[in-house]
Image 1 (tube, rainbow, N blue to C red):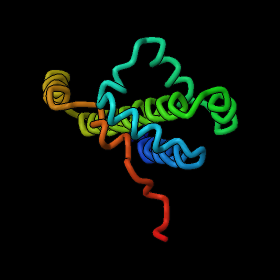
Image 2: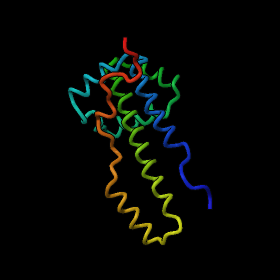
Image 3: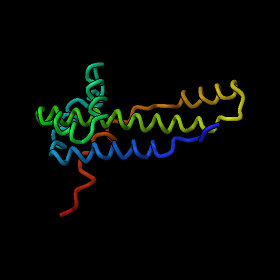
Image 4: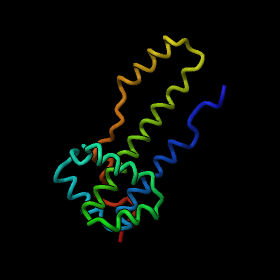
Length: 144
């Protein structure tokens, strides 16, 4: 059998979520994102299929591609796009950690594996709370 575990994927995906958070400061739209989140709360992440696809596309882009995409948006729209991509990225991180739990299954029977997976799935929630997506203050700024 091949190597078990997801290697660096979960850590790299979490790093990408942090990169998106930093981007809010780089283009100076954190305040607009916080204001929008305070206005609508977790509904900010209740996306239509089109909005989800837009956020997923943004998530998969290189920094230069993201810069071009953001250059066409006002501050609020840019912040919302970044936050939605970050939300999906954090969801992916949680899903990767969930998947990694299944690497403890090899050697068990299929029925045992099915039960184990079902127990994990019942407790699983991949959606991160909005307050972990939208940081009111930059963790990257230095005190003055």
